[in-house]
Image 1: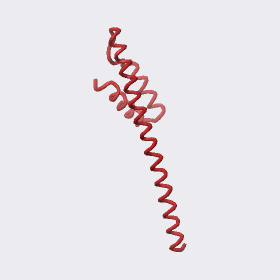
Image 2: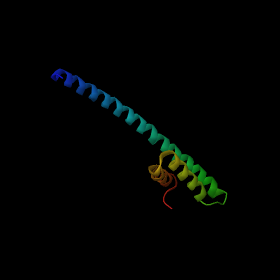
Image 3: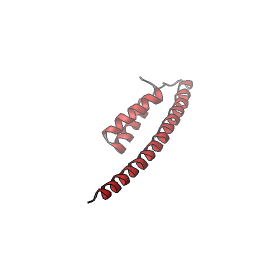
Image 4: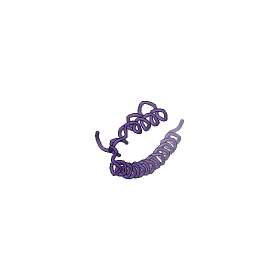
Length: 92
């Protein structure tokens, strides 16, 4: 392999990495937006529950969410779901 080949390969890899990072940044922006939307929707649910005399938190519903994320993403999914729940309802 010549020096020119290495340079071309390095440039190609650099371009691929840069493109992939741009895509990751765009995905992260979408994920953040969806999380913010989830937090807002959760606030509506909590307010409706409290207004009707219920509790702010529904633990059986939270368990469903935890199970859903664990089934889809494995053990790290549970940690992600816990973080989402905390962002959506605050600490309990």
